[in-house]
Length: 154
Image (cartoon, rainbow, N blue to C red; front, side):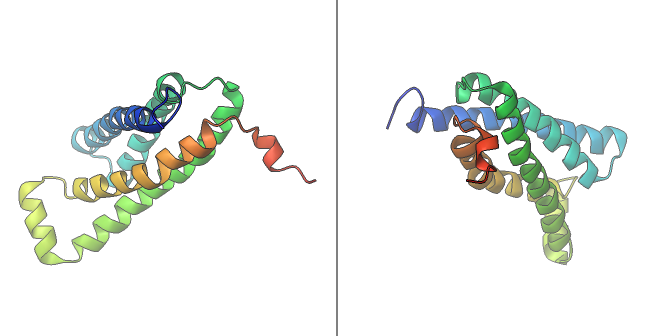
């Protein structure tokens, strides 16, 4: 269970990689909203794209120590990444707008956080990271599976 290629250490490396990508994501998002007055949904999208790039590079080299063809891994990562970006962007928007309709929640959170959308973004990011990103990268992206063989007819 605890081997160099899998188990607990791989999970911990993946979590550290995810944290670094999350920092990059949130940094881009917050800078775009605060400094450039970009709408939070667009800033969330840009942050997710930048964080995904950081995550892919770290995971390829360090987390999963992949030896597969870079093009195959890139195609698989992009498929998973597009879903991740959609889940993060849509999830943040939906949760933010839903919570904004509840006056006491909106008012309470707005007192402590200048940008109300940050709390829903954190919640959504954690859920997507644990239930989508890690599992799809571990089971699909960084496994030695040729994507062309998945779509061939027998």
